[in-house]
Image (tube, rainbow, N blue to C red; front, side):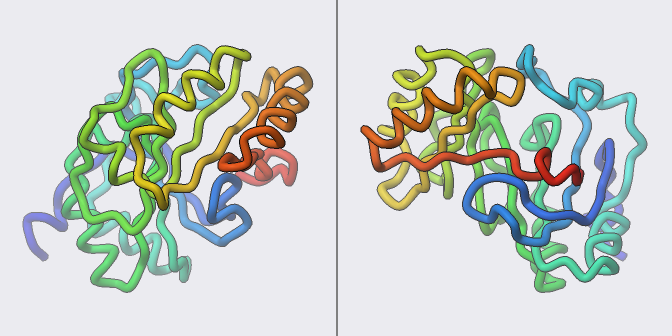
Length: 204
């Protein structure tokens, strides 16, 4: 076992489910939720992930074994804010097993790792670093207020032409935000709507 395999990461939870959002919505995926976040979104639904010290540490080898044993072809690394950590060893070990590495990040830190899909969901509380935006496979902006549309367009202008653009109504404000997002997408057809279908299906 190499030193990279023994690298430890704080893991709040890990489970095999379906991807509930974005381009890979509905696809089977193994989620690894890393502990630790300093972005501090007030509407975050996993605030318990923020304190890295509150969660047990797993080695890269243990994480990859869990993903492989489930038979998953996609591993989604999320958080918390997963790019607080250098994920080079984890993504290399997943790739060696033929497993795709997807990451869900606010973009507040540079990308360290070999990722097959990068979802950047920018937050006002700690904006993305400029280096990650051109790497984004999809840009997913949570819409919590009508002013968020203008803010979303600022980031859409900084990603690559092939980046997928998604607007996601904030779950707690869904009744108000969904009609607003629908009208915006009808008028700005470069965007698509991303709903959190895992919450409708009542799966993790």
